[in-house]
Length: 458
Image 1 (cartoon, helix red, strand yellow):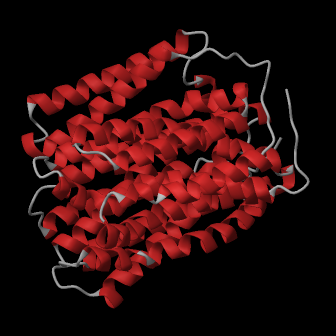
Image 2 (cartoon, rainbow, N blue to C red; image 1 turned 180 degrees about the vertical axis):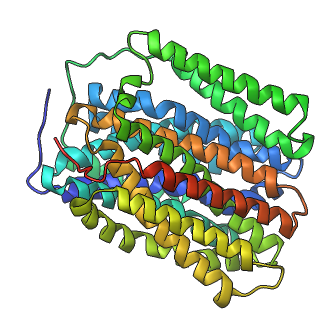
């Protein structure tokens, strides 16, 4: 086992943060570019184009866990730099795509790079900081990812309106190259030479197939109806495949997902909360653009500006939340933030009608939800790895990020089903807000069982 902690951890944090910023913003920047991409491929449907989002997220979610293991066994620096280069090459491929099939294929490769990046990024940060500073470091790392994910729709709107949807991918290149060059010079290597290096291909395939079938069923429900035999069949088979994945993981010697991680009740409950909140988060941000453009008839740039107040609150709130977590634990932040997130959805459900009102209705909702995201997302990342041993940082954080991405797949699919058709009505968005409220309350209830004394230890 090699371990070299630099004199100051901030250069490591800088490089790791650039990478997680790129991956996180790429996950949501296409929410704003969705309509423009669909217009660029006029023969495609909303369900077809949803796979530009979902193919990426499914592959990303399925590969995060084995990628986390790779970072621990083959070197965090090596896997980080490999993932960053793949991500940049695939971003260029997406920008030059000439058809939906090519675009989806490039997104799959991009997802492979992203999966290699994220767990190695967090593992590098955890390894660079001392024990007493890890809670703040993880909160800041999570804040960068949360800010990027929340800022994605706003940045995407401005980018698409001025330069076209292809620049939603080209924008990754300059910042990513800076991180790659800087990372080669400043990152030190760490790996666990005693850890098993086998790769669970059947388990990874089962996870991807199960999540993919569930997402496909949800997307098709808008056209076929929830009671359609095809939709019910797809979701039933997807659920059965996921059960098969669990059975496989319980009995194979070196599974893609080490289920023993879930023996700890705090880790188990944090990941359940991450799944539920991931669905709510994706539904809200994807749905915001549909609402502003379809109901209030905002232009794409105006919609981006209208969404931006929430993301601007994420980092300052997360910094404060990280400091509080070192003293009071993660549970109060998780529960309080989830309740606040539900309040934001309730505000929109009760007050957002057909007549635009930015200052009186929209801005307060963005303040509520932005504050909530700054409290919840970093705390979920921190609580997930709080009680893990250092040699499990990579795999533990990867599982948590994977669960969040599975939630994003389901959230995007549900949003397409609710409001992705050509003429969504206010009632459709109200159903979306009710679902958002219910998921946020469920997150709060789950987080009540998270140990309030949770700290970044070991």
